[in-house]
Image 1 (tube, rainbow, N blue to C red):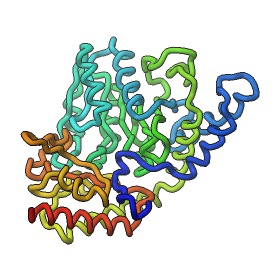
Image 2 (tube, rainbow, N blue to C red):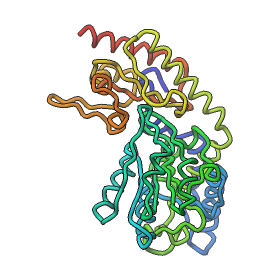
Image 3 (spheres, rainbow, N blue to C red):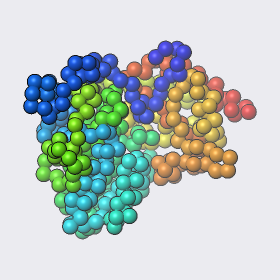
Image 4 (cartoon, rainbow, N blue to C red):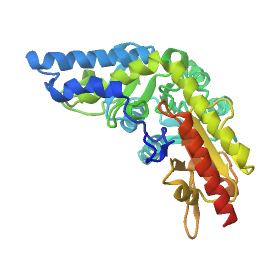
Length: 382
């Protein structure tokens, strides 16, 4: 990133394209334009490329390529997983268990299903944003057909006990889905170890393009079809495949698997450097999320008595981050995640999320620290 641009610390919002991902996509933008469903010569390379990409995603998740289905992104994957499971299993029951800190792409789907006659239990979290396994177990009823809890929270980075929750569900033959949009490429997401039946991926969180995603569907899991038509994606999602972006996501997953530990350590070092740099100069600082069970790149900090949007205005030319609260003239909108965690308002309203990435440099972190410290001190003086 050039010095003229703000330091980018919003990798949880979206990631830049990895140059190797763009290079892999180039051939299918410029030359191999064929429809992979075509039986003639022009369909050969695109069809093979999709197969290769499916294998690469499967290798990252440790599953069969036949269990990987390409979608338009994390939101579609979540919709397909939750709605598809609900309607395919309605004869068994109508109860769904989720958490109160899910992404809107899960919460809004659950609200929709409530309007369709389903019952939803929203699990609470503790002060660190952790779901209790015992709470999940206590929420299960004879009518429970699905548990959907995110792998890691997008705002505070807390990693949830998915394997333990899945073990409870498996004893009762309940389907388990996890939204892994934020965890892919940062921590391991081995579906065999997690024990989940369904898992969602968003390409643009893992250095691939926007508009492409994956839904992992464990073999034997029953889902209602999401898109009707000519039968692509083994009949689960009709429509001509987005070959270029599928190729990009396949390459991104290959890179994520190959360099997972290297990337994890780098992102954590940059995150901790930012945290220590800010804490050294700013005493009124609160960390949100679990101090250990947290994504290596995610840093949610509250600045006591300040307003997040005012801090962002002050640092806008130097640092790109996101707010955990929006302050208006007559009220403060605190994120549902911070509310669920019980963060006091005087802290919550001054919450920023910083998220580092593969491309983050130490020089950028130093620049960000200086900018935020100056902005916070200026606002306190004001």
